[in-house]
Image 1 (cartoon, helix red, strand yellow):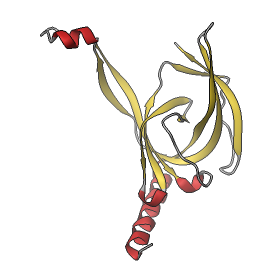
Image 2 (cartoon, rainbow, N blue to C red):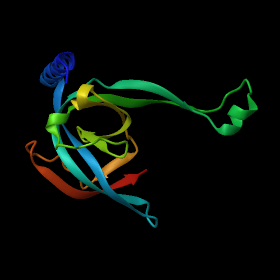
Image 3 (cartoon, one colour):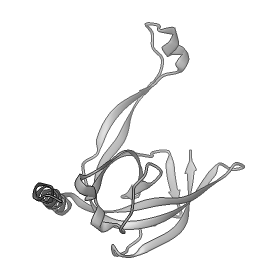
Length: 167
């Protein structure tokens, strides 16, 4: 690795450390292992691995979203039907050193912060794999049942199943 790449990686790690000190909170990263859906009652059960990490949590942004039916869009009428609502999204900066070696975030995983589940909309890998910038959208219709925030150290791995009801 060249000296310029080492300097860049060192700078990214220093900035990440400073952000964790300023905006750091404990979040739980859930890595999806398997999922099962009970079609009779609509309950989806996830089997996840949980990692309690300290991450930089950036302030929430309320962004308006609009949904329209395909018939209105295809008709190209002047009068537009649809729903406009605001969604809660946050950005999480997660240090790769807080997670096991070889860990990879995917769009199937999710983050729990203050009892609220955030599903990733976008995941960016930081310089030299030093961490991730995860843009998460709050799942307002998802209620985590039988979930308690684990009080753990960063080295402890927790495995459990949790049920999620979509209202």
